[in-house]
Amino acid sequence: MSDQYDADSLTLSRFVMANTRDPELVILLNSIAISCKLISSAVSRAGVAKLYGLAGEVNSTGDDQKKLDVLSNDMMINALVHSGVCSVLVSEENEEPIIVPAERRGKFCVAFDPLDGSSNIDCNVSVGTIFSVYEKKPGSDGTVLDLLRSGEECLCAGYCCYSSATELVFSFKGKDVFGFCLDPTIGEFVLTRPQMKIPSDGGKRIYSCNEGNIIHWDQPIKDAVEAFKTSEKPYAARYVGSMVADIHRTILYGGIYLYPADAKSTKGKLRMLYEGIPMAMIIEQSGGIASTGMFKGKIQRILDLVPDEIHCKCPIIMGGARDVQIVFDQYIKAGIDAPKLL
Image (cartoon, rainbow, N blue to C red; front, side, top):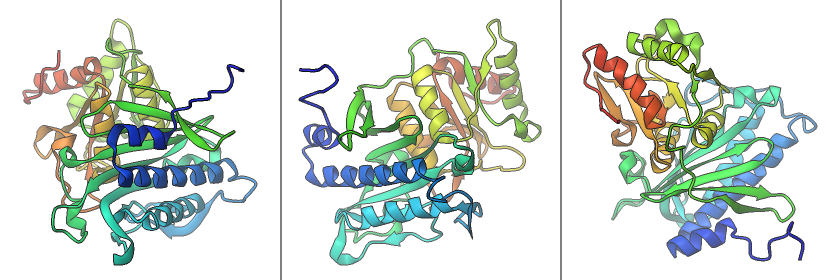
């Protein structure tokens, strides 16, 4: 047999069933995977299908919506509503939660950003989808309160990266992180990255942040970035501007990703429920650290946060312990309590 073909491919459905024995969870992940396949196809055909440009609307947080934002959102909503296993959906693109009709309602609640980094789409830069999954509380018919819970109660989280390949990365609560690549020849996600881990030695010396905001940062963040630049082995700057792409690189190569709170955005800019919490779960379960930095007067762990509304925001500092400790050290020097990781 040719080594180009695997007669025993570990597909996404088979993997989820083998590891959870939960048919409803298999249906849910299949529905998310179908959405990601559809979005991947739309992204790859955006030019010829005339999907570049603005849709003429704004989303729940006031950002201009691209045509692909709207299309990707519709794809996600349709797949999840018709899956029969969801009760409440929250999307970055919808101001209000989506309550699934009673006849199609199931036990899961899903929050998602259907097309993260879509400001990059017109110039053909990597974009992605991010999601977090919760289970309804006992006795609940499915309300937004089933999603307004800490990351510690998140059942499953993941992201899909659309680039030279389409990769779906996810983890169940307390488990390892796994990566699946879409094989276009069979139309299935196949396991290609078992047990993804941030390099134990910290990996490549990379810092990733939008330095255009530096004048608004607090002094410890400024000092940390300066420390990255001026260390004995200076760090390289790598910032895509698509969170999925920057986090995916951080897991595979090492380094640190920062989107801190600042004087302009005192609560940070990234949304807690469908950006902060799912990425924090992935980062921690791949061996990294996911912190808020300074937030509401103290350094906090992202997964300990409880969202107070569906589109609330939080600051983000994520990466390997080696590099996050450099940030914490600057807070300690400023007289602020911060963890010692090393």
